[in-house]
Image 1 (spheres, rainbow, N blue to C red):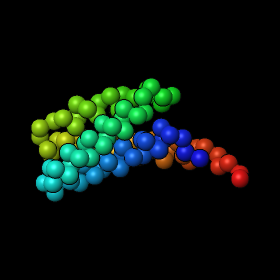
Image 2: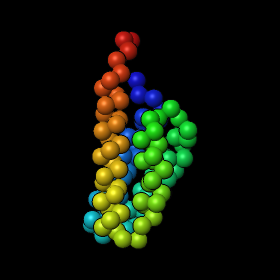
Image 3: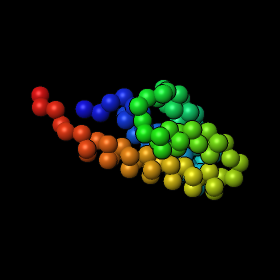
Image 4: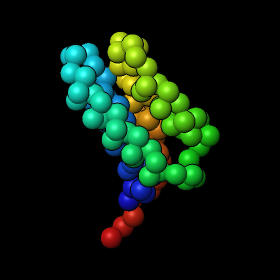
Length: 100
C-alpha cells in the first residue's frame, strides 16, 4: 500500500512532467495551471518523514517554477520530475506487499 506522501510525490512528479511538456509546446496557460497544482500538493505533504534530499527538492520547487525563462523552467521541471519518480519507484519497490 502506498502512503499519502508517496502518492502526493507521484502526483507532483507527473504534474512537473506536464509542466515541462506544456512549456515546450508553448502552452503557458496549461503549464501555469499545473504549477498551481504542484504548489497545492506540496503544501499537503507538510513535514512528513521524507529523506532530506527529497525535502530539499520540494523546497527548491517554488523558485524553479517561478522562473521567467520558459526553457529553463521546463528543463528544471523535467529534472525534478525524474528525481521524484525515481524516489517513488524505489520507495514502492522496497516495501513488501501486504497480503489481504
